Length: 392
Image (cartoon, rainbow, N blue to C red; front, side, top):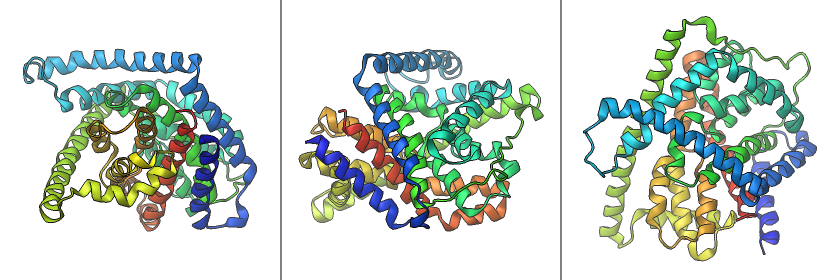
């Protein structure tokens, strides 16, 4: 049955992207086919093979070790503030972001990450049919995050046409930064996190090349990355540590606000119509849940989680995933893959603000296509969930 449903779902997702394409005749189908086959192979390897299980186990063990090191610093500062045996989401899940951010800064400074990102980006250029800048940005967004990545490209930011700017922003919104991957792994299964990271990378290029097709000439295919050694080492390290702490505090603040607002709206809806708000929006988004392979009996709960992620953020939806005992393992897997991205309304403001701080006119340009950007990034998440459903 899956072999019939998945192609139909893919056709619908591609059609939704084609419907808003800026140049339908300019779409190149060979790179799309290559990237689709790459996604299918990656999903199979990561979800259905011993080698994939070993790779994910190693990845998860690495992050578990890093979280252990982070715990040493957290215990030194916050030890005793949490009752013994109690769980604090901020302390256990968010504060390790500070250490991971510092580690990324060190690897960036000594040149390891720039070398890896350039090399992998060069290989990706063959798959996606795009320029080196777009390929580098896809990898850099995965490592640095959706706002920090533009700092590394600020030399070129002012010279980019609208089409290329859209692709860069779409990659940034479709992926997640390595600094918060450890936090995700504490809320959902690591194999779904790793699978989503791989699928979203190619999915972002695919959807962008349908919505916004263009060709990059040889003289335009330049890559100028900001040199991280322009700062002193400890100045850089201090900035990355503070940036990591800012991310942790911002996520905590957003969770407090969104969870409280959702609780209030749920209470109001229950008192007025006898059904909570998340169930109501679940019915509205149930067709999207069924589109990515969730059974009809679980589609309302799945639709509720999809809507929660889009309207608030992925953290809120991940925290609420365990509140739906009716969801089966297959649905949990599909939804988990869908949730691993920055595709939500607040990300529009984050990306616009980051670019505007570096280049005001380009920030204004991004604001103009902000909703189209979210539309495309959401299709990427739907695409990843659909591909994953083939092997769950």
